[in-house]
Image 1 (cartoon, rainbow, N blue to C red):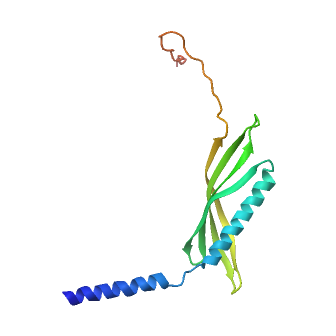
Image 2 (image 1 turned 90 degrees about the horizontal axis):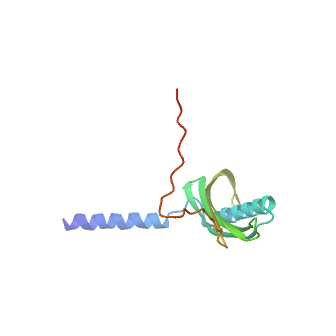
Image 3 (image 1 turned 135 degrees about the vertical axis):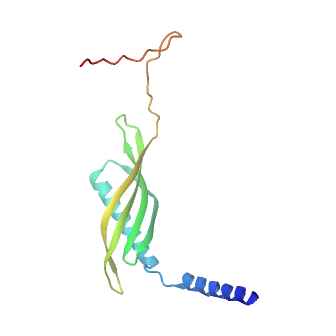
Length: 152
């Protein structure tokens, strides 16, 4: 039984070594290049279409390999947009992008941005917005408005 245990341990050790030192299908430099290009594309788009925004920041940006020729980029960025009353609001946007490899040479890999999804928007106000509502006077609860009854 000890021989079987040692054999299983040796096989697991060799297999894990191959997994750790196996060549990655997409190199780390390619991931960094995709992240930088995607940041530049988003920055140019925001500056062109929303010229009044300030403090564009990328909170998170990462890429994961889906296949040898497919990468998923996930991102979250924020910017300040002036409100109607002059107080800025911070807008946060989450999204993903799917990129497919078109061609690869020893010097460069070319990827197509095939899909871009905006998943979530969030607005944080720098100054709270006050909302007022009428309050009822006395101890009586305010009755709900009656619905019109339709007759057929």
